[in-house]
Length: 114
Length: 118
Image (tube, rainbow over all chains, first blue to last red; front, top):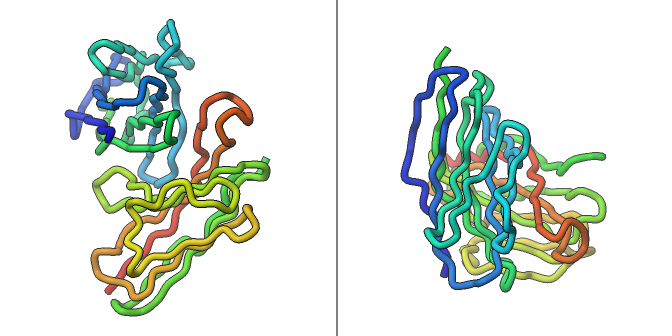
């Protein structure tokens, strides 16, 4: 069985500040991938960043970076220089390579304050 | 490149009625997913296809939900009969199969179908 936990149901951050969204996971599969998706109020799911369990370096994509601590089973998303358009729900997702099982977390609602 | 298409975008039905949703994935994507997202929650995987075979349907309520992907391309999700608790957004997503491309299965999502059961 696998599990994703996002402990922050909601966060308020001042514009231009950095923000860290927490994600911890539990899986018995040695090979897995971790994803972050953004869901604005319009409802579409937007892929942000991916980290493979065997990747040596933390993933980065523009203003997004992933703080991957494998021993702690955490994959926190860091957004630098937040913008008003970053206000949305953010979901962490784990995908086990062995059985291709997918599990989403419960999400964090991020609100950027001008 | 065209994205994942879903129809209808909105549907309102009464309980005990039937409803069907359609999804057309991105061309060439072997894997297709149906998710149920209840308001305020994360998406829950209902069923995952690879081509026209089922990979995972462990969370599909099979007494009322059914899904098919006959030719390994587009897919239909049906609810019969609907219950009040089926009110949700139904998301379809597609990805390349493992080993087919990037080495990881980034999912591309459609706009969803918002179902309201009265």
